[in-house]
Length: 214
Ligand SMILES: *[C@@H]1O[C@H](CO)[C@@H](O)[C@H](O)[C@H]1NC(C)=O
Image 1 (cartoon, helix red, strand yellow):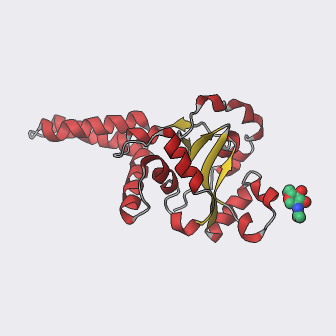
Image 2 (spheres, protein in one colour):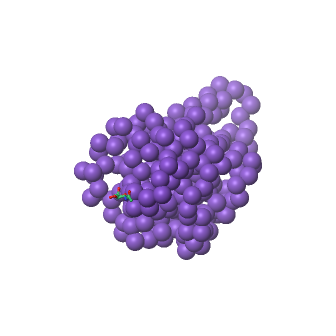
Image 3 (spheres, protein in one colour):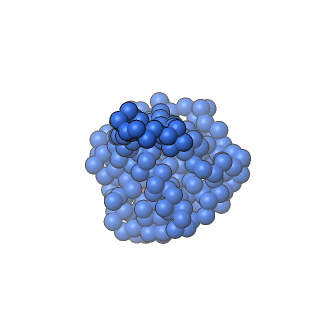
């Protein structure tokens, strides 16, 4: 299981340059949680203001080079892929366009599905800035969203968080599962005698919310 859409990035990469102008940093506020949906996975970042996004991304270059200006450039596909293989990555700052990599950006979508309320925007951004720099990717191997979850909701990196995040990701990232859950709820309501509002209504509401939010 890779936290990045390996199949999709080659297609997306070719679009990056021509779509730079489609991102308007004025749409985002400091501390916003930005999500870039891809076919199977979601990439997360925290908006810091001034067209800067802090995000955690696999990258081989800091492992093999000390050239800071080269490292600071946009993470290319080969850097990303080798970073994934080497389990090396860093929390870094990029422009909105470099972060989004050609995809459409969704703002603060997690707020609707996370059990924790979001922290104040400035606090979120300060937490994000505090963690800038290299970090072993293996720490966040299956949960690249840990970083932003910690920043925005104040959740510590723990097994429990991992379970929570994995569950959230699985649910949120799959429209089909939301659809099937809703379908099951309807089926249960229509065809079983044991229609108890206490169980079916929450099921329906949750399914509907996830469906709308995803
Ligand atoms: C560092 O990287 C930059 C940009 O890729 C390049 O222009 C420069 O020559 C490199 N410097 C060294 C010392 O390799």
